[in-house]
Image (tube, rainbow, N blue to C red; front, side, top):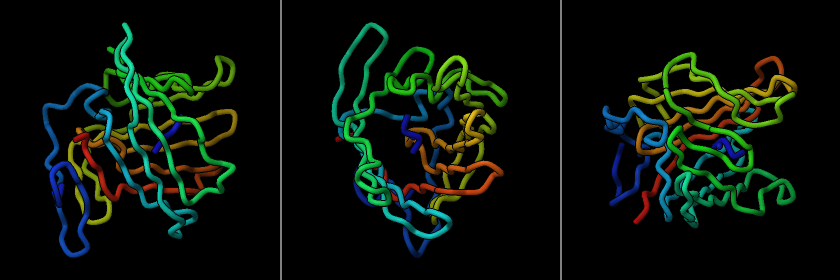
Length: 203
């Protein structure tokens, strides 16, 4: 999951099975950026992490708090990543605001998703004015397979740091959030991939 990132087994849980191909029935009415990152206190995502194509641990993300402001509600997300050394992990929650224009990352600072969600739309999603990170919608209404689960009506956003020549490609499913994130270094080499294992909606 960009951090600056169905088959119903139980109420509110979306997951893949080992034996069957399951289809997450996407909401075809989802059109706005906030529809592709459902933030509510208690929501949880768990990802399988692959580093250089080898399984390297799991990433767990949880929405722990909400504060309200004139710009819209702000949610605190905690990250626990067993694939990274402890000293490289985020100790403090990262805050995301649900604004009229989209989903805003307070730490980045910038929008990780921004309306309108049409191919070619681009915006600054982080960095500094002289060294910006830019995000661009590269696909909409697409279908992706994650494990044995097929997600429909997804959008794909590419965030790139031109200075460092790095990019993150994130696929968002409506009413679920990020289902796949790929981190590539200079030359397009895949360094890390995160695949959604389970999504627990807020109780």
